[in-house]
Length: 87
Image (cartoon, rainbow, N blue to C red):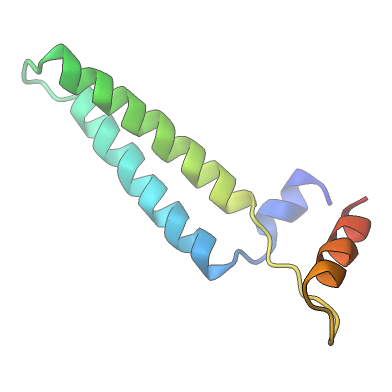
């Protein structure tokens, strides 16, 4: 599965929530970084970390894929099936 197929595939609900949180963190950090007011260096450092963390969280969450499993596969069998399918 290439990157384009992975990004266009359905995303599990948990990762959609994380993606939304990541977008909010990146937006808040970006807003603090470009604020015209003079902010303390500590606040700017935290804003930079928020921006990076939010961006990474959003990218990783978008790349998560919901893989349907055949009926009856549970636990270790499901993990083995998924690993063999990706290879």
